[in-house]
Image (cartoon, rainbow over all chains, first blue to last red; front, side):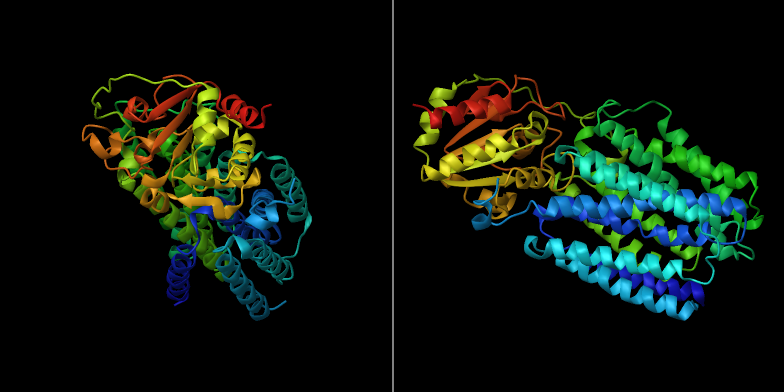
Length: 98
Length: 454
């Protein structure tokens, strides 16, 4: 039953994702991708559970490396997306820029 | 904290992820959307840290510190022209992370066959994403040739690797053990499969590949979510997966090719286009200035060459001068211009071009007849009329920006070499085309100097 329940969540999320992302304009496709990079860093949750579990020392080590890799995505993804998005300006505000 | 409370936190996090993505649909709200998405991530991480199953902290603290420093450094330092490489590298680290999470899940006691098969899946997708992205990154950074790498036995090798992956996965489900040779073989084969998948794909097809790998990195997180029975991984992973798939579709459509065609055939390897002959009409900066000076509508059409020449800042300067001169200035951007979706938009935004001047291909094509001057900067295939006229051309059928229908076309080009796909471009021989040879940045700077002149 667990499997079915998870699959249910998966299917609904994919449909929701399609709806949301097809509205993103071409101008923002690069920030969308780097933002998606950051969101895919959600594996950090799984990595934390392994790194912090008492199961086995190897699980902790693998989890620790996975945390590092996922955090690269999370931090790098959000920071670079913010950097990029703050460059997008409308006409009137751009005049005062550098 | 109990599982119920943790999952309640995950629901809040999922809602915020969705709002964050929704706000990405307009440049005006996108910055806040990104913050909301980051909050969603923070909530998910904090809820996990207080999960009662997390009992040791050494490994995860070390990992978090190292990852944060690397990620922060990379994000602050990267140049905007290098965004495709950056996204490719991030896709790779996300993939590898999912692979490791799947692997570590093997150490949990009492895995059912369903969990084992999702572990195999997260190792497979994670591994393919990892090595595929590394190779894509090397190709983008031109450390590996951008040409498709094809060899005779490729299909046979691919088939064997695929069969090996299936066998290993089945055996892993039947005889689960953390030191199982099937597990190690599966990891190695998945890594090989990623390399094999990206080898035959050429540099011009990189926008498709990056989008696809972007999608895989989300799907890998999804699979890992199944493996450890975690909702938020599935929701966030699916959102990323869907985003990558949509971008992949847009890119394929913009090249008039099916995804299968991009993935399995080296570009331009099959057909030979009709040779184009004619006279090229060069122009110098002075004459180009005179034409631009009297133009009332000017459209810039940037391509990857603009990124290479780092010409976006001088282009914006010229654009502003033209506007002061009374011309209407737009920037027409083809969906596959550059090496990733939206690449040109970001470069121009970096150079302070307001986003309302960036127009999409369909919009500019509708009014291209009224454009006095179209300035093509380092773009080639995306403005090649052979895509419309020459049935033998490998790019035939690809939607292009019809600059040849503008009153005058300036093509900025280093020399007469053909574009990334190696296809001749009849545009250069057009009646209304003038070639401005030289480095794009210097040529534009020359025009700027003419405008500012004595």
